[in-house]
Image (cartoon, rainbow, N blue to C red; front, side, top):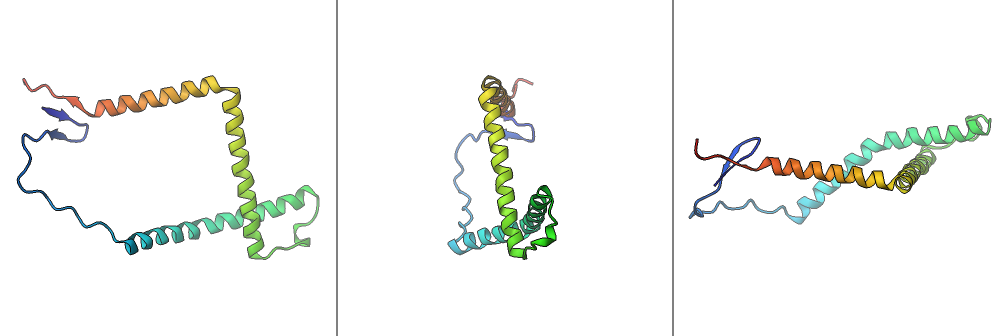
Length: 136
């Protein structure tokens, strides 16, 4: 039986091949740790400026709300990064609280939206493998 995919045509094998292709060797523990450390380092390098800017805005925003000059109480770079972590934590907390409030008030609509997304996902998977008419 043949199946047609959107990208390519796949034929079901009639029998198992005599020779099996060898699997590539699994990455070693040190390779896994190295890749995790590389990705973590890259993430920290990319996110540090955002944390600094967020901390600076958080610090200056508090003093602006109190009608004080932010330069009255200067922060060192480490303090700005700590303020950034606090500020981004408050943003994340506010976003999660808003999402929970919306779901609590509109739970029926939320279920409907999730059902529509699930149905769309199932239809897209079902459309990938459709039987091919072998008569033509």
